Amino acid sequence: MLNKEFVQEIAAMQARAAQPFVVDGLSRIVVNGQVVTVPPGNHSQYAPTPVRISQKVEVRDAASFLAYWGLYSDANSRAFANRDTNQVVAILDYHEVGTEAVEQSPRWGVHSLTLQLRYTEEWETWTKKNGEQMTQAEFAEFIEDNGPDIIEPKAAAMYEMASNLQAKREVEFAQAVQLSNGQTQFAYREEIKGTWGNGTVQVPTAFKIAIPVYEGQRAVEIMARLRYRINGGKLAMWYQLLHIDRQEREAFESIVRTLRGDGRSVFIGKP
Image (cartoon, rainbow, N blue to C red; front, side, top):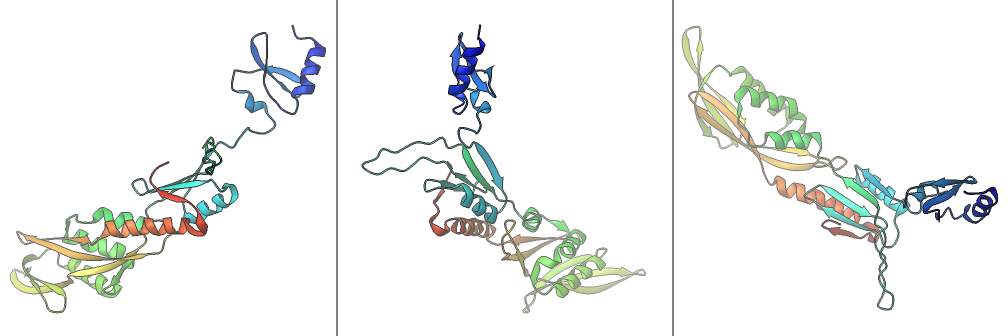
């Protein structure tokens, strides 16, 4: 049985430290002058402040990463960049680095900061359709919807191409010819009031888009080659983005270079 004098004595000794003690085989702690029984190892929740920071923070752009790093990092904080997961993970309470005369000092490593990069809507739109065959009308609609991302040829020319393809969806295509001006000319037959007439429509053999890879980054220029197939008079079209793996790698490396500014330690890999 705990008497009043015992409680007061324990309270005087434990009020500041908030350290547990054992009475009758049970772990106890003093909170506001009262003895509280707690499970072993869980006494820290009753302390005035936590024993250490234990936090997992996730941010979406490099600016937020650097701002948080500036608030909580120290000389031993380390970051690890992993392009496979599009993440940069910083352990702010990483192990202390000693010298030849001083032993290395481990730390808890429970205060982490993660930069989770996200692809832009434009990047996901263009890469999702990359290499996917579309009908003539589907391709025209895609160009109309995403025309603002195209920088060469000019938007007006691409919209005109899309409009022409939309207007010729019921014709029979026969052949395609590569022209000296960098265009592909499709020949077609069209039935008008019971008679057949011939015509042509031209599209560029390639075009260029400018889109950012990750949110918060500047746009990068990507060349796209136009591909087609004529089967049974029907025209199928698609595009092939060139060097997108390289563009993605360079975008990630650009972020790592930014984070390495001012001497910050960023390793390639996982913690």
